[in-house]
Amino acid sequence: MLKNENGSAVWFSSELSGDFHRTVTSPQVVKNSVENLAVSCEELPQQPPESCEKVKNLPRIVSGFATRHGGVSTLAHLSDLNFGFSVGEERATTLENYRRFSAALEIPYSAMLCANQTHTARVLTVDRTYCGMGLDRTFAEVLSGTADADAAESGFDGFVTRESGVALVVRAADCVPILFWDPTNHVIGACHAGWRGTVGGIAAETVRKMCALGAAPETIFAAIGPAVCLDCYEVDDAFYETFSAALGTAVCEKIFAKSPAYENRDKWHCDLRLCNALLLEAAGLLPGHIDNSALCTCCHPEMFHSHRYAVKYHGGKRGLGCGCVAMME
Ligand SMILES: [Zn+2]
Image (cartoon, rainbow, N blue to C red; front, side, top):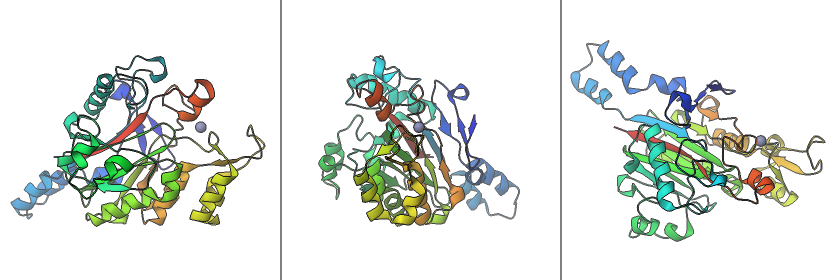
């Protein structure tokens, strides 16, 4: 088990099945788990039975990020666990990996749905009727006739729901996957924040869409998953200018660095995970509710799929990892 800066733990698969790992909900969330509330309910006999029943029926929130091990992929550049559909693998094989991941998270595969990721800052509101989207059902099939029908083509990079039985999956290989949950108001969300999504504000947009469903910033938790770190993420001056113009110098001073220790000492490096954490704080999340995994996909290519590492050493051939958050009855 690893401990990160703010004390939240990441469990590795030896404690689960296969080589998946999952983030453990922070202590504040554990306090709100069904079991604990049910116990405190029994300890309060003056509580009317209806509310005890209500407490026991609270949904269970599960979240986790996958490593690149524990699945059925066989191509060398994929290890044995890949979640991408355009990386040279048979679709049926990739789908089996989703099944294995759902089993590791102890949620039904049929509850899963994926984002049609195109580096936008667009976030959809979904419900149980969207389950299977991007897996056993096409985006067009699910989205046609809804207000978001155009997203089947143009894409979207985040989604939120207040329904249980829905498991939101976002994929990444260096980009930042972020999972959200509000255990008080029973709303969850997930987004994929590459640099375009990050500077476009998809993290805050996910919070905004969650709040439209009844969540509140101060009760939302966010898990920032494994992604490329500051040291591994060299960017050009145009990138810096884009961030500076959109986010201001105060944020940029914290997320950008140059160093003689880097291969190119004159090039900027950017910390996308920290950037998203700062944007979430600006959106009203409490710092203690933001779990930054501190795991770099590029520093740990044996453990995670990494675009930058693959470009440098494997001609760009690589798979995709994923994160999933679900609310279950
Ligand atoms: Zn790194």
